[in-house]
View (cartoon, rainbow, N blue to C red):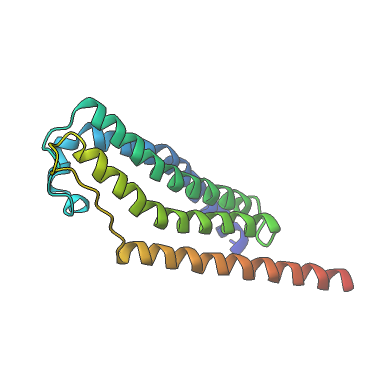
Length: 178
């Protein structure tokens, strides 16, 4: 089996995994807020917000779901672009402008996800404590090493996409000369 055949086979598998993730990401967010009482009060992401009630009202749960879906939409976009990239690989398109564009959009979405995480975290802190009495409502903004790492990885992929596109352009120019 040639390397291209292996790349195409693995890319088709990755396409399916990405398609499943596109469906599962928003479903997970909805499921999380539907079952908040089971996992929420002890979740480490909520440690900076000590005033979260153990039970959420339906409007609070719906607002929290909406905020979670904002961040999830960035993740879905990133995975959607990855799925398109793997579709190109599966079709045997390895070194094209479309590949570089998909990778660039994926990388930009990863960077956006890193920036969206503290913003949605702050919104969630407000939503989850909005029904508390005055003096017990909170706005908690955190930006930690995981967000920095995600931002760094997104930037690395942006540079790789840029280099890949430059190399593709150079290869096309050389092919025209010959």
